[in-house]
Image (cartoon, rainbow over the protein chains, first blue to last red):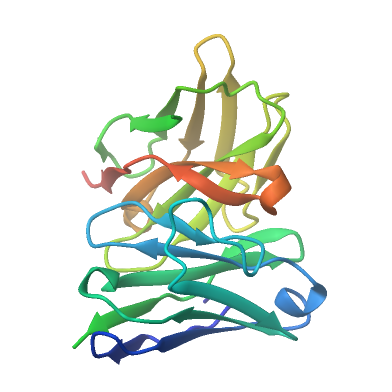
Length: 109
Length: 121
């Protein structure tokens, strides 16, 4: 059982904005650890989407943005596109142990 | 452009040791800027971090697997490896290797394509 909880699924129509929450506690996100986000397209390896809470690696569209507050973090996707349909995972540390969130499946309606 | 490639047996018998290697190309496993991680994903489930190694040989492991895991590095071959002992069906998963960028909070910016390991007699 992961210590970082995400909603199992979110959905939206093309062009809409969706957000994915990553809820932790004082031993992980609340302790000041950075949160990173990964996108996993079906049958492929995860891809780094956001690092250090709100930083996009080169090549990641600015439709993706991250934020962190207290014991939670969020990933927002604006202008949802069909190719955004994937699984998304947050990742942080819990007492110096690298941990992933439970994962969220994004469906484009 | 750095690339990672996992290799190893796709089928391992229960109670035996799973052994995988990750070959780094386009970059050096000896760089002091990175850790090198192993992550796994059971069928239909989420990601689990197994552990990582620094080029010096320093390691850190997931406590839930620590008694069975060994990660090593071979700088001469530009590879790092995973050994998981006493495997059971619960160890059936896709195994990924990845590069951790230290200055980016150890986020994993390069991943191998993954290799499927099935534990079965």
